[in-house]
Length: 106
Image 1 (cartoon, rainbow, N blue to C red):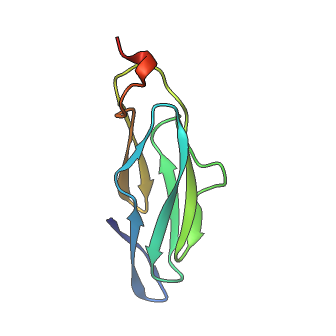
Image 2 (image 1 turned 45 degrees about the horizontal axis):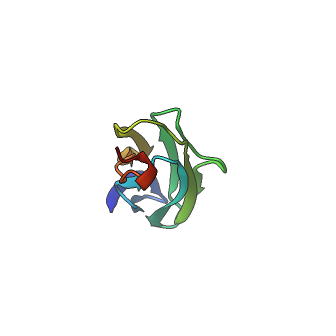
């Protein structure tokens, strides 16, 4: 779980956490849910550093909440890494560390 120090809310500092961190996804692509927990009234926004990581329903909120992450499928065996940034904290997204299927084994 990553800790977030966000903007203040009513004079009090915001302390939030996000999970999961890191986020591991299959090579075939998938969606996942990121949870933001912490102080009510604290705003947060998520951004991605990679075009293959998107937020189909947006990724902003106030106080505790969740948002959906969509990761596009990829080919090849070399894993790729991207990042989601929420209130200055980073979630590492790791795609493609899964085992090959039986039809992909030599």
